[in-house]
Length: 166
Image (cartoon, rainbow, N blue to C red; front, side):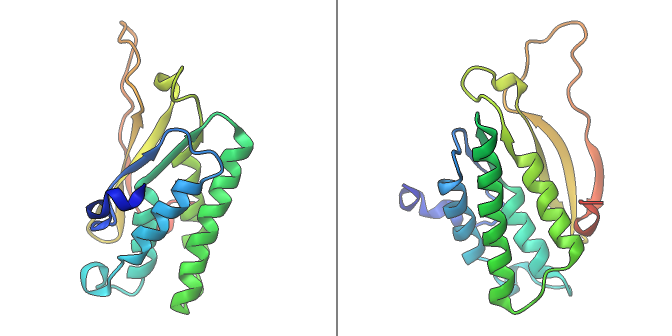
């Protein structure tokens, strides 16, 4: 199925949502394809450019499943892909990187019902900005019915990737 949209993998920040993620088969395949296009010429420029690029791939991949065990397995499988990419480069992952990856997985691969309760599913949109930082905005899958007391989620402070898991 992913071969039907080859142009979608030209940019590591292209957002993907799997509304019935199961144990992560599509999420893992999406993540692997994104990682395969990481390029030092396009994404490099600093000491930790590769870690930031990996996190960008992860931060733009979203999944929902109704079963908590499936969500946990999907997160573990995606983390294994990230770890393998680090090993392939011959660089040990920093502790800050590992915590950041876990934080992103916690906010973007979630338990929820995308069919019957999409207004209760909230992700964090991570947008990369200058200096290996992420701008973070909570984002509802579907905006709840507006009432007098509804307040849309407020943006979170911009943060360096190494501080995401702090």
